[in-house]
Amino acid sequence: MAIAVLGRVRGNRGELTAVALSDKPERFRNLGAVTLFRDGGETRVEVESVWHHVDRLIFKFRGVDSISDAEPLEGSEVRVPMEERVALEPGEYFQSDLVGCQVRDRFSGEPLGQVTAWRDGGGTGLLEVDGNLLIPFARAICISIDVAGRAILVDLPEGLKELNP
Image (cartoon, rainbow, N blue to C red):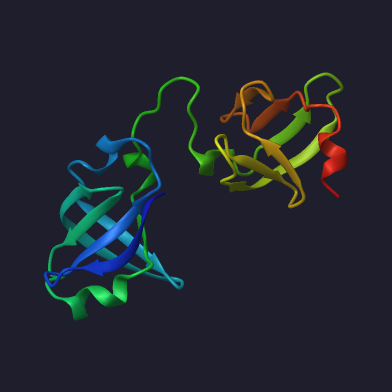
C-alpha cells in the first residue's frame, strides 16, 4: 500500500521530500523497512527518519547519504505491506479498498459498474466507475459502503449520470 510519493532531493545528506498519501501523521512514526516502487522496479530500504517540514515529509533512508545516492529514488512510491496499514476510524476507507467495488443504485438496485479508480477532485474526491462515470465520494451520495462485500450503494443526484458520457 502506497503511503507517500518521493519528490526531490533535499540538502546534501541524501534526504528526499515526499507528499503524504495519508492524512494520518502517526502513519509515518516508527517506519522500519519500506519498499520503493518506480518504473516497475522495486527496492527494499530501511527508513532512518521521517519528519515534517512545512507541507511535506522529509525521508532519510539508511545507506542513502548523498545527493547522488538519493537522485535515483526521486518519484518513487513509498509502500508498506497491507498488514501494516494504520487502523481507520468507522466510516473511513482506504482508497485502494474502494477500487474494484461494485456500485449499485440504492433504490432501483441497477448496477452502475465497478470502481476503476480514485480521483482527487475537490473536497471529497471522486469514484471513477467503469472509466467514465464520476461519483462524488460524499456521505449523502455513497449511502452504504461494504468493503468486505465489495459493494457501494449510491443515491445519485438527479442528472449526474447524464453529465457523464
